[in-house]
Image (cartoon, rainbow, N blue to C red; front, side):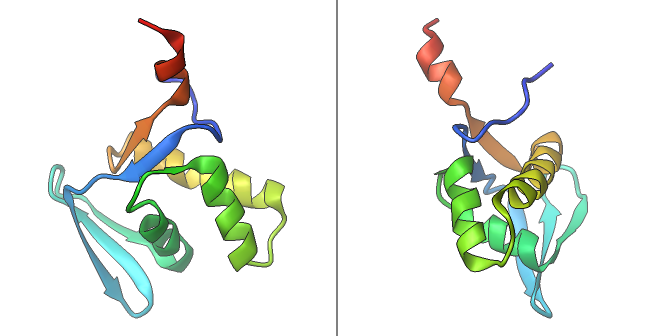
Length: 103
């Protein structure tokens, strides 16, 4: 069982997806599974932000400057969204704990 995400984990989007803008919302097709996803407007902004590797904590900070939302509420939604993307194999997670643990 994979441990849950934390703010120090660095994530990036998987490039094996077809992503498009439709009416201000991001939609995505997973080439690997054939599944279709509607990321919505905020999810689309998160998707754009993770095009390059970013620590989850930095992503949350970026979002609270863009939206009028409390940090705790933003973090809760970001972790839930990223957890779903991770389970679907749509993002890559580079855990900082893995690099520090030593093999």
